[in-house]
Amino acid sequence: MSRTNADSEYAFEVTAEKTLSRRDRIRHRVDQFLLAPARILWTDWRARIGLFIIGLFLFLSLIAPSLVARPEPLGPLLAAPWPWGTLEYPLGTTYLGESVLAQLVHGAPSMLKMILSGALFTVVVATVIGTTAGYKGGTVDGVLMTISDIAMTIPGLPLVIILAASLPIAGNPYLIGILLSINAWAGLARSLRSQVLTLRESEYVEASRIMDISLTRILGIDIIPNLMPYIAMNFVQQARWVIFNSVALYFLGVLPYSSTNWGVMMNSAYQKAGAVTSLEAFHWLAVPMFAVVLVALGLTLLAQSADRLFNPRVRARHAETVTGEDGPEEDEESEPTTSVGAVS
Image (tube, rainbow, N blue to C red; front, side, top):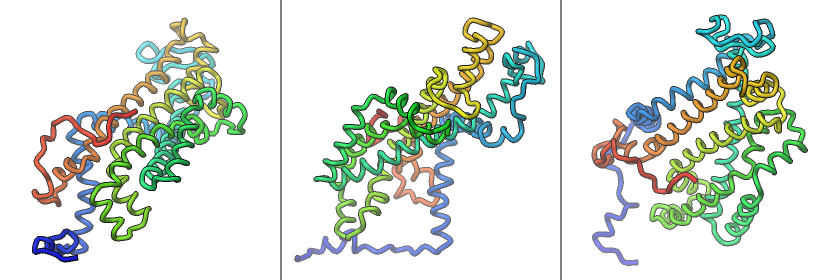
């Protein structure tokens, strides 16, 4: 193949004019992957509030159980929360005299385990199936999408109820989180596959194929990073799905449990103390309900700010090690955009 003078500037033949030392490369990576995301989050009020709420939830789940004693029936029955009650029981007590604060704290770890297992299961399975099907095409695409279509046609709630009754999950929060997301991956896998069909025709992906780079590296380096805003938003969306559905099914008494969680608290407040009609017991129902709403709000705010976090242009503007040539001019306060679309 003959080449012209213009071919001499072909991208693969251009070498870097500047050589970075090991220290510069480490500084560049720390700035790109740690400091720049932190600056982006700090400039977005939604991210700040969302992180504060999720941080509070993580504190309740990971640290507070070692600081607050387990709920014991030692207090007054259905004591009102502070300031109507005493600071010894700031959120009041149950009909057995157990501290509502202690129940809230010791119910948080199981909620965190369910959220993480369910959301991770969904995005990991959907990403593997969706990107593989979209990139490989042909028979692989046909088989994987047929499986996804079958999964999408199965009614989710009846399937969860049947599996919860028939499988020996014994109240394990990790298994319950996966159970609640048993077929939620299918829709996300189809959405990701449609995006990969476009991305696989991109010039940089074609260049990777010509250089005989492995499938795993092409998917991991060239394709999946472009889908991260959509995947991250769906992770948060699925986390909200898990927390809402778990609380609802626990409230209805469908899911088995081996320890206190927020759904069990609401079920007990309703079944044993009539909290819906009794003002004396209403705080027992309201406290876990408020906690669920607050965590869902935090996840929603984080999802809304995730696009800016994964937007390469915004990241370049906030990375001090990226020169002005790499950081295109863009209004930081403009509405975030994504190349994928809205959350399903």
